[in-house]
Amino acid sequence: MQSPPNPSPPPGWRVFNDQLMPDQTVGGYLARGQKISGACDQRDCRRRFWIDFDNLIRRGFAPFPVRELKALLLCRRPGGCAMGFKDSREGSGLPLKLLSRFEPVRIRLRCTRCKWEKTLTPDRVATQLKAAGTGSGDTLHVDLLEKLSKPCAKCHQSAWACEVLWPQAVPSWHGKSRSGPPRPDEKPGHDRLGSR
Ligand SMILES: [Zn+2]
Ligand SMILES: [Zn+2]
Image (cartoon, rainbow, N blue to C red; front, top):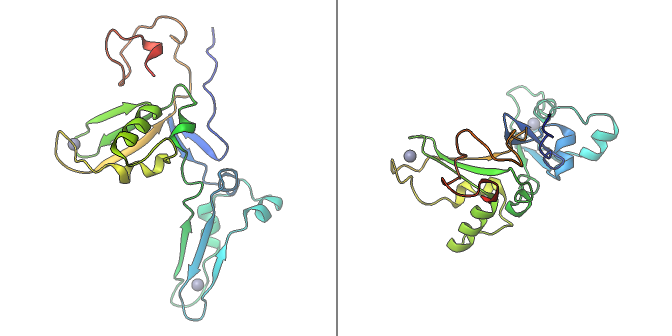
């Protein structure tokens, strides 16, 4: 029997390699409410702007990659362009309490030096942030890294990476008893479906 696919991420987000990624197209930025502003400090340019995604989408630019759009916005002056772009914080991430509504979604923290890693439910991360007084369910997943003040317990370095794991296919064991290796957040003997 075919397993149903897992729920898709909210508009403006994609899953690549079972990880949550921002959709880097014009349509993606508009869908998740992220804005881009730009400024060029070149004396004869001094442009300041906000990309009008609404207008671009009406003209059929929804699938256009924002990276290429940025390249088109550079000024063509001798000596090059000093255009700097800034993606707004608004729309840059998803709140933990929203992620927790998707049953299979997990947050993975890993040490990029020694490869130690830990996988937690979004609710568990929110609970830990609350206990530490540094965040809550409203914390955006992209802000988790800056909240990790502790160095790695194993190698004592602070070189963290953080990913939102979004498994694409529901494992075949879903709804029945399962064989195979335990998920990283499981403890042996625990009710596997109740591991939230
Ligand atoms: Zn310029
Ligand atoms: Zn480490």
